[in-house]
Length: 438
Ligand code: ASP
Ligand code: MG
Figure 1 (cartoon, rainbow, N blue to C red):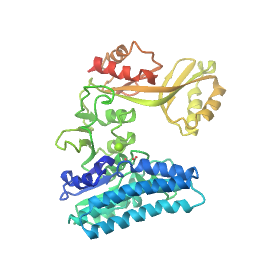
Figure 2 (cartoon, rainbow, N blue to C red):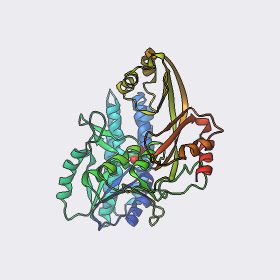
Figure 3 (spheres, rainbow, N blue to C red):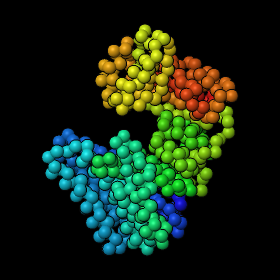
Figure 4 (cartoon, protein in one colour):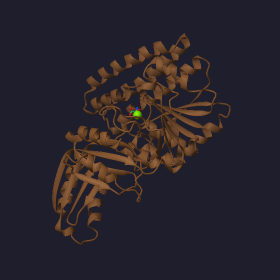
């Protein structure tokens, strides 16, 4: 069984929705995971924000504008009276759910998540109804009945397996299953989601839960590139990555893949292929267990919006337990740390979630002098640099020797060399590394 995921642009218009059958073979048993129609989730976020700000007028206006787009879409998508009627009932229903929240006196993040879920619910049903209209059998699987996260927002793979398998077993004659990316239930049973871009994660979680043969992520470019194509010219797609390399790249900024989506695939050893809807025959990028060649620099990626925190403390000198105390503070505020460097009397670390920065700083200040640098970028060079290789760190540093560097991290894993610098130097760093390393 294969799991195929299509993003928002792949279902971005009636023509693209119809065109899914150019890639999906309905005679092969598979689950197709869809995102919301492109632009929808952003619009729903805006609507939710308007509600949160108590601006019902703006919310209603946004709802009308957005509903108009769907009215146009169904007119183009359905050819029969019957199909159009179903499409109309569908969008009426979902926009009614959104509107009805305007009558609530309280609007909390819980209601906001209900709004966000409507996008995927619509895109999947629209395709399902279209297939029905043209006589192609498919089964629509309700993701809200099997996708689940726990109190720490961690997906529960056993639950997914347990709840999803019966749907598949009940439909042994059917080949094509369709389900919603991104949405799930949380530990309270409320509607929740896997964070922006989460449809990739859905596909990989389902692939892991079912022990699928392969997860295919279909996008509009030819796989993961060895540098950011928006910044560097002459980048090229990477044919093969190991899970570890792909995880580092997805985490450190390669926007093509949701950062967490590699882990379930890796844990359950399900290969992931990144493929291009514009060029379906192209090789794309294969992410699998089989390691790639050793000692090869694979790719460069950058992650912006990083804040560096520097803690200088003489109490750290020769003391054990110091780092634990510092880390505990970040843990309490559920703030992940990306990079760390230490000396005998100081530690620098970087975070990207600054929602609790002030509280964190206040607590860390108990340990010593604290400095904060915002607007930083992590540039990460990924490859297989096992312990017996040599020269990679030197080559990376040599390529950025004309730039001021805030932190360097090497040896944490065999797969990356990371540097932290001011975001204003990012473009130059990416270009210089590209020219010297490839
Ligand atoms: N629709 C969601 C988003 O825009 C999930 C996804 O597209 O992967 O973030
Ligand atoms: Mg995406």
